[in-house]
Length: 160
Image 1: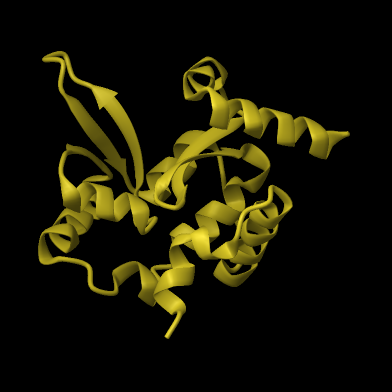
Image 2: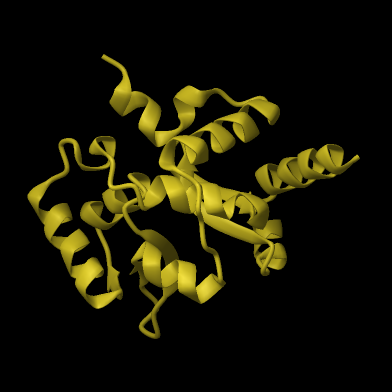
């Protein structure tokens, strides 16, 4: 029954993203995980996301632009900052930082970039998983929902 509830919730989120705004509470987190799109992940899988994201694996840095590397280093030093543009999006898609869309007082859209260590402290998520175990858990969850592992960010970077 639990799996059925998760599938129904996922179907609702995919069908009506605005519904997610109503459900954005402590049990759901949003990450650019599947096909580089915002993916809502249950808290139960956050340690897996954290293990993969904080691994600093080669796929995360392969062909990363100089502006994106500079931005990453700034986030690591400062913990959090606001940004826009391709470098910010690249960091999110590679899971190098946690990103959250915000609306500024001036009405602009920006991305609040946050280091994974700061995010983990803020949401009380700590992981003892290895990056490979985290990947295995996320791949398994995606397969359960009918998705393919090729949709995850590390799969395309590891293929020859």
